[in-house]
Length: 244
Image (tube, rainbow, N blue to C red):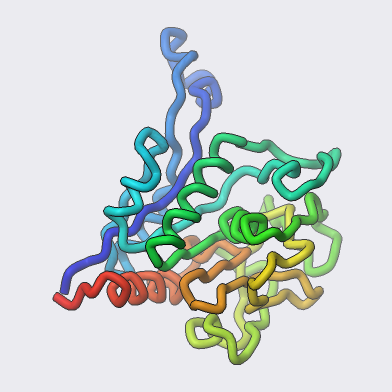
């Protein structure tokens, strides 16, 4: 059976973030950062992972892909959803926002399945006209930003909304990790809330056409093969008619 090609987004940082590990002659350079757990999860689910670069035309890249992973990372610029900066807003990457929004639009136009993880789910919400709550602390609600805990360990429970597409992928109740300090505020137009934490925080979003599955947690750090990645690969096979 042919394996679908799955594009994975990542970060672009100045080389100075490497600290003492970068030679003085290279301090003006940038590097692309992709956490390997994303590509490992794609591969374990039966796909061919490719870590995407920003140095090509988005439409041309998407034409070669069978599916897309919008990965986690920096906060989205608040001006993209009409908000002022909160004092505890984290680092933002405006160029990444622009690039991933363009990728999302091109992937939607092609009908690709999209797995949106953490920041990726928040980006989808913003793209559909939704807003974000810019900062929650560890002592609020279920205690979402578990920065000091092992990201491979569950942090709180999530309830999956029955009757959603996501409920055909995930169990009704599951334990997830929590590596985010921002949450969905107003849900984007047309998006379906597919999972919530015990405090009501949106933990899952999907589209009515079943082509976007968004989760607030990081499934790539949990037991593999993860059902969300398996969903992505199966949808990619179906959309691309990869039967052999």
